[in-house]
Length: 521
Image 1 (cartoon, rainbow, N blue to C red):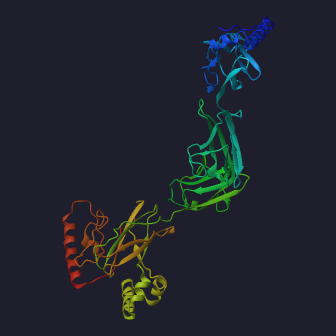
Image 2 (image 1 turned 135 degrees about the vertical axis):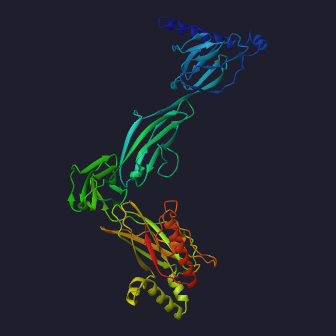
């Protein structure tokens, strides 16, 4: 164990160290009478070689200095010009230092300030020495005191977020985003700063910068990016269907930062809350609830949002008109020259009639390929089918080839109402498209999307199974344009009607008699 230097005894110790060095010099200078004996004993040499030691803070390190044939020479540890130990005497007042297992230097609780070169020297006439380098590994540490900060930018501008960290080795900064990818589409990005160009509301959120260098645990800072922008409004549905006496909700989704004030209008009249009219706000969802809807409630509603940066509005139409119908038929028909179209529609008010439009696909190309005589014959057959004169045909089908049929509806109190119509005198193996819309006492509803269907090209095709067997169960009755309702078991009266219908169908097929038929359920 090396002797330590106290404050009271430090002058005496330093004097002793000086005397030891003088003695070492004198010993090395005795070249005459002692030269032979020194060579005989052998010169001191280092067994240990210089190296670099990478140590974490607060750990303990031992810097080795093993000497062969030390003799009476003084061994000393130095750091720069400061002498730490001389022989077995500890000169440095640092209590963390001591000599262990000979002349090895131990340093406890190492700190970043301990990094540097430590020299072990033998006090020969020409001093011999080795250098041990101590590198202190420091875990990463954020230079900013707070681990959470806010960043703010206006829409369209560039947001720049920075993150600085210290440590040894120099930490690597990695950027990520909470529950999302970065604006560039990447999962992560390395760099001290992250730039978001042309910022919009989708870029707002929580970003993390993480510093790591392989020493200790990584450290993370959270950056909350706020993008200031005028209100942006989305509606769940721009057209809402309801009925008298019912309750309905009109919904606007309002995004804005800072938050916006939202008001509702009906046409040009600003609305206030009443017992029958309720306004709710939950997060970005703004809802106008109308209870016990009256006819006077139908019309155009507008939600207007304003947050000081701008104003935005979106409109919703509240209507009692029928919804868009949906076709139920299969696309491939079983008939060569006719097709049964069926559809359903939602309407809180009973539907009064339907308007069905249909045409052959690529009608203009097909008409152009036919001889003039056949084109004339086709137009005459269409007029015979639907009872149209030349002026009606010009107005309805001249421009785009569409033909229309009014199909009466069977009054029903059900929300979902169904109807069907058999189109005859079609071309075998041809493709057609159809659209339909419904009318109730509030007017015509929106037209359905286009539905494409095709007639059969098979010579053996006799009939097409109904897409709604519970309503149109009997093919004979269906093809005659009759409505067939069934609840399962057939009564004798029903069987009688079906037999008669089959007989009429056989006669129809034999005579190739055809007439338009329609119905609804």
